[in-house]
Image 1 (cartoon, rainbow, N blue to C red):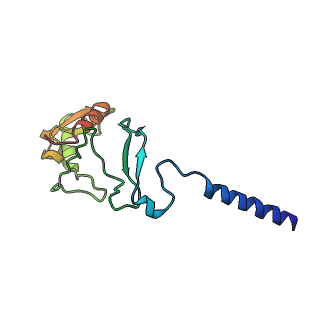
Image 2: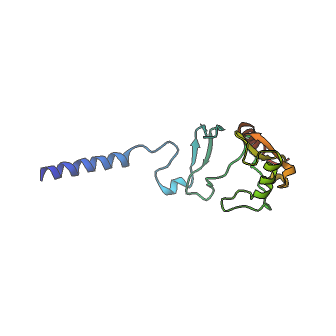
Image 3: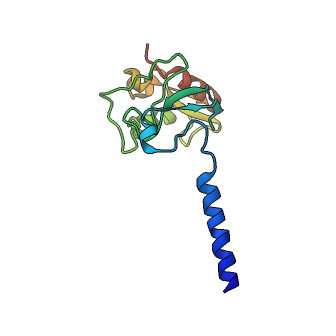
Length: 153
């Protein structure tokens, strides 16, 4: 009986400290307050190496919050091709036959170690998906080019 009482007291103390613990800075205690507040996001580095600067955003659960909106460092949103055919994951569909033809023409029918097939004029910017618009590019160069190509010129 005494063990049960000690366990209940410990459980009550644990529950009261987790509920009474201070909330993460920027988060509000009640749902009605969260609609009025913004959340400060500290700067962080993504897995791909890009740095996201510190900024304020609306709190989760509000109508203006959108968790997946990305914008470039100058505050302009990335352009997305509205007419490009896309797969179930939202990526622009590529022609596998055109890619295989390009690889065969360049002498690397099974791929080139350390390189990827890249479009010279991006598909999102109106480039065609043909071997004449493809090139071999190292993985590091492809990452750098993809960052520059967020906006079509």
